Image (cartoon, rainbow, N blue to C red; front, side):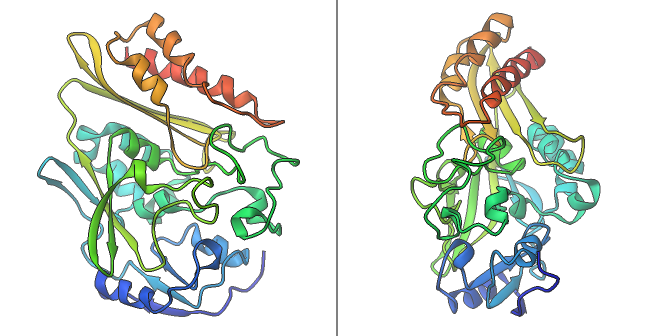
Length: 333
């Protein structure tokens, strides 16, 4: 880590359109190669700058834009601005009542101090925590030609969807939002579009240099969560080595709707096990039409490891996610 940050131009954006116009002047590069970057809370980006992972020519401050920190009911659901702090999300009566799994996820991020400055957009779009990516290694994620975790220390790396790069997605809020079938609102020079979070994240199979669909001149402005039916239950579980601050070794967001005593709809998403939030589709299929009981818990737990390809030191994650899945079902029973 350097004692000094690289020099860059700092721009306080007056509006979303202003931010996009500045980014549009610096179209080159994605990932660590990007020549322009945005900052809100800065809890992740400052580390990348100090670690000399990225060296943008311009940094656009989004906190100067009004209106991007609002939570409000909209037709068919709830809209949350990208600049809403994690603290405010957890403390919101609207979120606690409508989407408790998201409130739980926000509360599990880092420390109270970080939650008061860190934003929803930043948590969703944060870069990987892989120690090879964060260290002085010219890995695939930084434009190199090797993933050092393959032959190195990989106890925290991916067991699903690795290929080329075996990072794990570090966000706590992303799996909760994906389990809720949320969409991201993305602003670009051509206007704003809405993208399902299932389509928002990009794995190394598609593009090893980035984790989302965002182009150099695009920003996430917020998320929209659809209303779930009455009788919906949810839970967020996070396994980590320390009680606070730590990123998840694995986390699980689970949302189920019940009708006549059986599950009619389910969202089950893990983080910390794949390069993007990992939707456990087989588990979702297995639980629909079933009651929440011990038999269902065991059956669904047996499906979550299907397709897992653990590395030399992270095989424990297979048993871990099976145990978390069983625990989640029984806690909601």
